[in-house]
Length: 471
Ligand SMILES: [Zn+2]
Image 1 (spheres, rainbow, N blue to C red):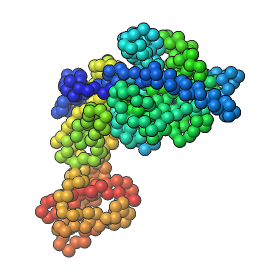
Image 2: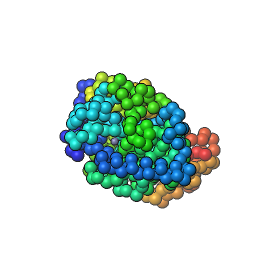
Image 3: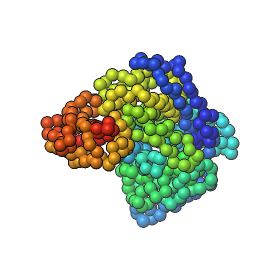
């Protein structure tokens, strides 16, 4: 789970020396911390719960068989095992680069406690003193896991085609610890008789399809939640060769997996699947560790004024000590505000960094905040205008229509001195000076389609800026 300790007790680095700013000297400290999921290593299922699931799925399979509705007769319809796609995905309309990381693989060492062997002979798994050895793959949401769950940002999808042989919904989904609650889940049997368990789903998100219905690969069957024994939103994905449950499967092929000889993935991800989770701008420090299960407050914003403080944050998965992350803050004219390398100090499945700067935004328009890591570059665009859009510095001034095609009118109770249109790079496109007889109207028919900023100045030198779309 996420740490129950306040942020300062986590690994919290405030360091200058290990990065080099090429553009000019840094005027910000760095804040960074690890996000540790399921820190107390609580089991996803009790043995009693696991037995109940086995009984329920076996009873349903018998019932389907009697009704002649069992799609894959286990005794004579054996094909080769399925090849899975990744069982969670970001829903349409969201723009994180990646929404999850792995906290625990299957534990192949039957001894306990703290006798850990994952498929790759490492220790990215867990067990407990009561004899529990983790039997699935745990994929937790990162960053802003509860926010993601509230927003239905990460969907659980069928990793392979099959028949729903059991499902459960309606259970509490904001668990923070071991509570012996039942999880919301879907159980799917594949054409070789193997069975996949998808657990901890969000309450009310479980597919409306019924037991006996078929699902296709990639079909959404739920939303990642925290029902059952869970410390935060994650998917527990557990696989068996058949409904007798004689053989657990670890879908990852590796030297220390003696459950199955081949990978069950279409494309097995690397053991350390390093990548960029998100690159975001914030108008306040992101609130990442509120007490469980409080939804995080990301404080994200993409629209700022030149006098704002902007927080530049980047979120990573499976960062490995010694790796280099490259960061850039790029101005509208493509010059750098800052451009620097950072050396990763700690291997971690999820980690974030942020810096904040003020009084240095000398161009208005579209800026970029960019990170390059593990062979990919993620660019986040944000806008800086001369004054905050929200500040009503000139009483009840507005522009219309917006978007506009030929003319844009400025409605104001003030006497205006000028109006200036800037492009997103901060270049002046058009300036108009008014006199006492002027109609506050700008002809924009000659400028090309796109986004601009319109800044109006009153004779008392008050200013107001608007985002203007030319259609
Ligand atoms: Zn689990």
